[in-house]
Length: 177
Image (cartoon, rainbow, N blue to C red):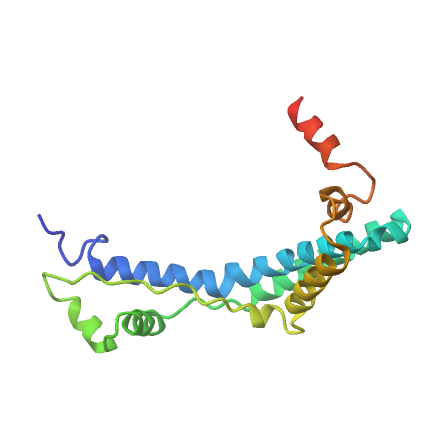
């Protein structure tokens, strides 16, 4: 039995819903998560290079705290600028993903037999959340660190995240108990 064209499981309704979810991911979730990922990458690179071994622990803690505050501010700013996609934007995006005209999707609402529709992949809008292109700086520093320093221990990289000391083995021992 074919679901009716008014059912949420109808191909058009499912395609519109999934396209809307994809657009929300692109506009809100991915840009809000990216600053935290960039901070983690920059801290890992600083740990790889051993930069935190050269500074006192209070400075190390302050660097991590300031980085976290900047990430939270960036995520909140992006969340405040968020705009839900309109029906026209969703319909146009779904039409483009399926090589159709938007009017054809509108006409499909009244058809009993609807063809299956594909939902396009999310487009990473990272440039808006990284205006200084720090992702490339961090990537280049990580590659140079690997080329110059060679493979470093996981403890050295993890030292950037643990200003009060500790090693990966001590963390593993805590998780086993």
